[in-house]
Amino acid sequence: MPAVPDSQTRLFAVFGHPVRHSLSPAMHQAAFEALGLNAVYLAFDVEESALPAALAGLSAVGAGGVNLTIPLKRRAFELLPRLDATARLLGAVNTVAFRPEGMTGYNTDGIGFLRDLQATAGFSPVGRRICVVGCGGAGRAIALTCATQGATTIALANRTPERSQQLADEVRQQAPATRVELLPEDPASWIDAVRAAELVVHCTSVGLHAGERSVLPPAAFRAGQVVYDLIYNVPVTPCMQAARSAGAQAINGLGMLVHQGAAAFAIWTGQEPDVARMRAAIEPWVRPPS
Image (cartoon, rainbow, N blue to C red; front, side, top):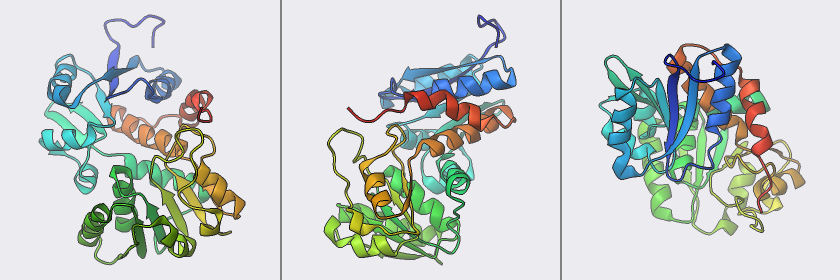
């Protein structure tokens, strides 16, 4: 990009509410610069009610694409007439591409998770037993992704039984060959199922704030497991600490953030970004909670 943006500079963005914590601008700007692309990536605080106008505005000025984060993913899914198979599977949109034929919604969260899991741990869900802790939006995306990729068993743990039951029904519909286990609402009863899993994915927000204790104790983990915590802005979460103390391999969600961003970048530009450069651009911003 030129030292000063010019009339040829292409606009990309992230929408969210709030959005000031987003690492996406630094990550994507590094990718643009590595490839010598004349583009800029900005963050905009957009409330749900303003999303239709915000998307229309970017489209009108010829923007290349936009990422969407909380709480806009589901709303975008409802708004957009064109949806990629990834968005239809997960029922949410985190990436919008502006095409001559109109806006198209994608979801790169699943592919970002799978790519980082393979790159960091050499792990694939195919034929594996997986436990998903937390069945909100993130847990839903992980469970559906793993099930449709060929996991043999998905155990769902959530403190609200209605939410885990709803997700179980969706998984059974999308991946009938995958066995679904519903765990009781009391976390103390999750230990055996978690220990039995080959991959444990922690999808709750516990660990974002200082002083929080892991939902699961060290006794819930074992050597030989891979434990993946979706929290990306804490280097070592309480869940990761508990897992590592039991000999498990524990990973945070920073790599997933990078890989989902890289997938969005490729959708927009048709080029593969430098993933290492993207990660290096945001690692300095990852800090222990305070």
